Image (tube, rainbow, N blue to C red; front, top):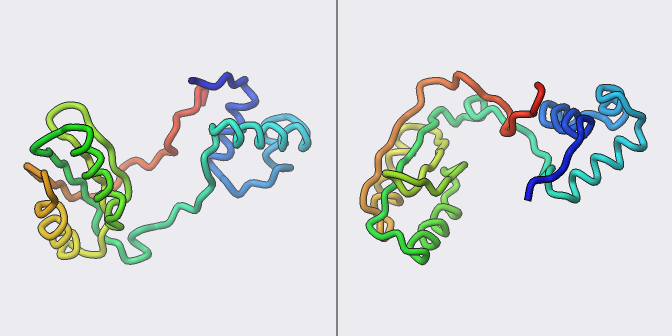
Length: 157
């Protein structure tokens, strides 16, 4: 179900998506309302699930993770049990940062971050290729990130 949000709610979401550490007073100023109703709106957005969490965005390269890569996985069988079993494996692999079940030629798309090509290579051979029910694994190393927009596009932005 899609939430009904007004223009102020969208402004709040835009500001928080840009800076999750903004104070309520500054947020209220930027969206053009006073602090108490702003805080009530933020809490309502949190309770509705529109705001799922707050987190810091870390710079992977500054922290020693020089490799970003994608792994495209096709399973031999795609029953619900097979998909869930692979999902459980994905949830245990720290190297996998984001994962999607796909429609089309591949079953899963995994976004991975590793310290080195060797670490990623070992993961592919020892975990992905060796995983039960995996038919094919294709990988692509990234060269550089050209866009890093917040996750949700805000209407009117």
